[in-house]
Picture 1 (cartoon, rainbow, N blue to C red):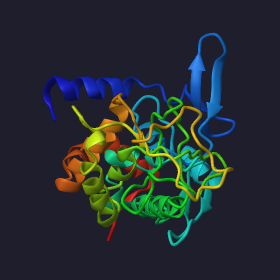
Picture 2: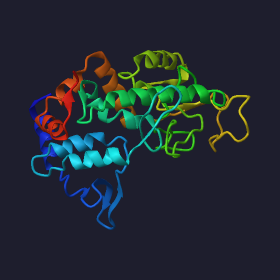
Picture 3: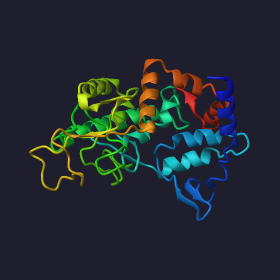
Picture 4: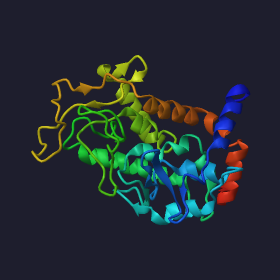
Amino acid sequence: FGGDVKILADQIAASVEWDWYYNDAQQVFYMGYSPESGFSGAWNMYAEQLMVYILAAGSENYQVGKEAYDRMKSLATRKSYGTSGVFYNSPAGTLFTYQFAHAWFDSGSMLDADGYDWFDNSRRASIAAYEYAVAASQAYKTLSSVSWGLTASDGPDGYKGNYGNLPSNGGNYIDGTLAPCGAIGSIVFTPELVIPAIQHYASIPALQGRYGFRDAYNLGVTESALPAVRRPVAPIPEAGWFNTDVIGIDKGITVLMIENYRSGLIWHYFMQNEAVQNGLAELGFTVKP
């Protein structure tokens, strides 16, 4: 990682005006902005934005410090599911929210100023997702101990960002649709659960595509599924629904996390960046003993 790519990446990161995109009164980052209506929404929970606090704290000209990170933790909810143990959960429980920042930030090597372990947080979220799928397999053919990890993806009724697991804050959606990237993105956290899932996905001919696994699939409901069990509006073919599209963001987390599991390559280079090191120091992160 160097040359023009590194120069451009550093320029982009250095130019982000974090302090402009920050609500000082509430100590939260905004979620959106448009010239017509101004700022909208707020990152007032734990989710995929963990990286924002590190980059903002490490910014040379537009720094937003530790107060934003501490505020996020104070607003976030902590729950558990099955044997997962308690962890900071995202509103819809969609599994990518526990993965994306961790594809770059080597959370497995560090603790925050309070001694909190974000890598373990994602490990617990992955266990919860696994156990949620096992429980839901009574109603959905797609889900099982080797087919789990609900996450944002395409579905028979279109893209849904809230395909998710328990625990959640009531926002998770389930209709039997599953994206392979959900489990695969957790390979660094729970390889003993993920590798059997990859092997299972590889055994399904209709799930194979030019770029690896198709984005998502849905095999319908089981014979014992109650009428109240949610189903897609679009009919599911007898052989199952298999998405024809490929979504780059889902392929991205798949490739990055597999490489981190194999070699730690992305973590190795990202964690050497000066802005990242400055941000982690500003937030009070320390290397695990």
